[in-house]
Length: 312
Image (cartoon, rainbow, N blue to C red):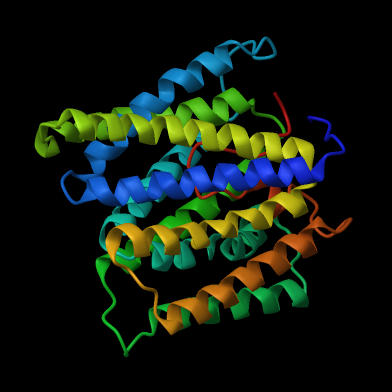
């Protein structure tokens, strides 16, 4: 495990920058989604992300091979990551940015729920209360019966569930699998699957749009590097809540570029979800609360990153 340095303020700032990169990434995804299939966007984004990420990993002398110790679990996590990514990208293209984030932020709460049957963890009353309150926040955002629930809402919730399950798998195998395995295998599988869809969905791209897709790949790499650096500089319980800063960027980008203004229900619901998620992160950061890696160390809405992987 990487030893943390005594610079939490620097770690906080670097992580904030990383999540800003991710929010910019998602705004570009929404823009491109008006013209291209989600599968085409993901393929080219992964292609451009794979190049610098593979160079970084190959330059790491600590990585001696890329053979997974738990191949089926690594494969299962990779599939879950692709589902999370595809559903998340689709949701960004059809829903307001802030609304998508408020639903994706249910993932840390779902990690708590899924860790019970899969990892055998004991979740006590306080964390159960936070989960229930957070899910009430989801209902406030969705307002079933008062507004139409669309495929985009279902996709956002599916992305949150798949992300949570993928994070629980990381809890189970993260101490034994190398970071390179956890990062590269989902990327390779994503390119293979999305590449298989290209003959039926491909649309010729303008040079400016191709540049934006390249930007998606490089932004995701920059964001991952910033967030990993943040976790190495400050405690996980300090860095993890910074992921919620993305909703501020989403609100700003939505207003400036897509004429989106979140209504009061999205504001209230997302506030409830964020407060519940922060409580879960704080609760699990306490000594002996979680027997395995806590939510703060495993959750990321992104399919390829484990912010503070325990083993190189």
